Image 1 (tube, rainbow, N blue to C red):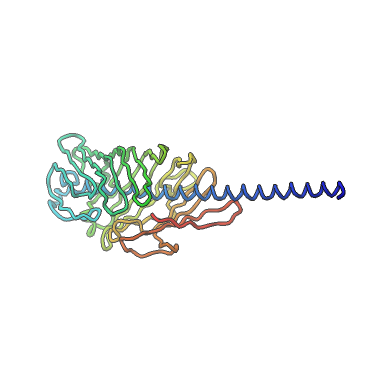
Image 2: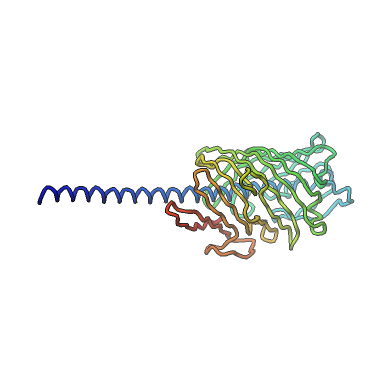
Length: 333
């Protein structure tokens, strides 16, 4: 074979090898990108939903005490409420230790101090067959303020609340502070007759993921409560960065990448669906441009589902590959 032919073959082989290596690198990068997008979507759903659960528990605890909620101003001293599928009698007393208001926690109210406090201690008991919780939440409300008053503000301290998802053992731990405001005024016990009640939430949280990865998340949300065959809660984002509005959460994800989570379609939770997230959409904007859209309230095929109150709901993550193609990822939540 002529020397020139040897050189041509060598050059062709080197070029072809380079193509294979490049394709392999692109494939590995796409796979890695897909994994990070999928992980962030799962983190987003878990942290956001559990944060909302803590707010629901705080709201239920505030509402359950007449001297704190202010129901005595309306001569309402007793009634029934359903919280986390547990029916509880609301009694007009000033200090109580309640072990049934929240199915996996003890609630202790102290009205002898200023600010008055409600301490929620989670005991790990499994409520729905999907996760356990431990840790403490302390709610503080000044003397003379009633939770049903328009503009009433409470401060909430979250201390080592650890949630473990039973299906795969995934664990997160939440610490931090929360300010919750009853913007509109009104009591959840009167929701069916009073129309819409609006609460706002502002959080500064630290989230501990696996391998002791600690990240800081900020939260700014509005929650509108209405009544339709039970409580319906509609959540929207209220923060703006000057470019984007409707931001609900922002901070750094477990990979150390800055992100913002916009609620582009309001997220809806329904009591007649066992207080589960049944619809809504997040847009995740990341500093590395691995952006995605998360749609909630789907079945395993990616279609909107009905309201069973049991079984599994799914979310769909749509993200863009480096070559411009998009791909859906279906995950349970």
